[in-house]
Image (cartoon, rainbow, N blue to C red; front, top):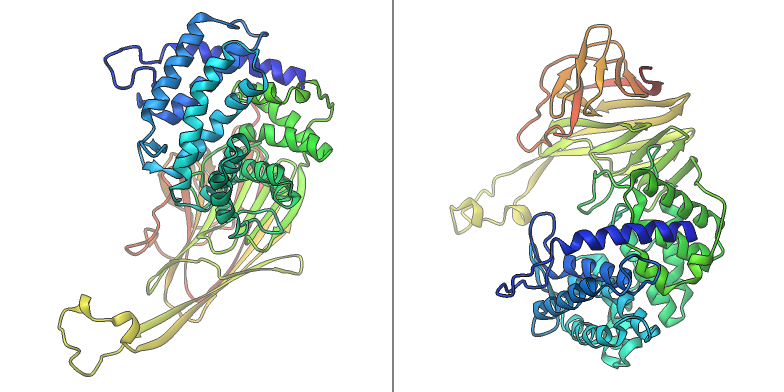
Length: 548
């Protein structure tokens, strides 16, 4: 992948030059040697990223900054700052969230280890001995900090365990391996379908994959590497028609964020070679081509330098399947793509259907104010005939009187939840069927069990589209809304359009009761309304946009 390597090399040079401008050079500052991020915050993790990039450029004879005295000075100052920022127990802080943080220490170590391993492997590299001494002190202290720390979220376990195993291999300290094995004893949260617990396609899947590869290679156990393999295969069915990653079922901060697969590049390349998987190598080529088009490259120069055999690897294929049909039952998600359009059905989610044509997206939500419930959120998702069925029973209830004094008149001190009897019912039943039709979907909605309840179907279109029907033509501004009464509604943006309907109308109660999810501030929302009990059928179709 010589061409990819050279792209990353040139990009790394630009980053290094830019980083020099944001390094703190005030010797009186406690942040002396650190680097300012985009919000003028100076902290270890960001500074480590900048130092590692600079080091790759400084030590690489093919760069224009090879053996640059200015760069060397910046690297050494950065390493001194990073060491000063370590807590006495060796941990680092993520200053906007976590302090004395084992997981964030693991993420810092993960980034700095390729630099350390490179200078150990290449002792004749420029300033390798000087760098190695400082890096050893930082990494060894951090490993001890990880031994003494805990974690917050599922992926943290594997980040800590994998980096502790790396440090065990480097330093031979058995307590690092012993602590890592305590995490691994829990078992890995990767399903047979390739999904991790957090379902974070935009970020933490990649973090988990890196950890699984590291753990598997150090322990010599392919079962861990198999997890990364399964997830990378699954991820190929999470790529949308605009090349972004579907993130709307994530449980983490990437949920609903437009993210592209830039940082998955090296995993597909590395695993493609390791497993002789042409599909992965094709994906790596496509991701780098996408990065090139967007001029937004990942920081993997040091990784190429550590694995020079990947520079010499050449593979001509490029791309990934643009037609797939996957039902991940354990994860409760259907992912289907037909070239320029795709759809997603999600169990246990208020936005239960997503439809995308090109770069234009639509989501469906069925708002219902019934007792404590505020929106349809399916309890099951099953394949039925040619489509899928989602069902929920919203259970109504009322408290009953104790009939006696319970030692207090303070409602909040009464154990109402566990000791007060309830009257069950009534129940509202939702039966939703989704079936693929030509160029789109048919969605059938049946609500029964309770009459007289005003419900709303919310159609959230990406902002910036023009919304048109036989009765109106309106600019779809972010955070705004309208109620459609009949006919087909079409949202158009650029080359792509989505047609939905027929609309239906019975009332204007679209805000929902207190506690209802508000409409998306990033979307333009169209409401169809009706009152229970009812049965409605709509279609969603991919259409061509306006030609200019």
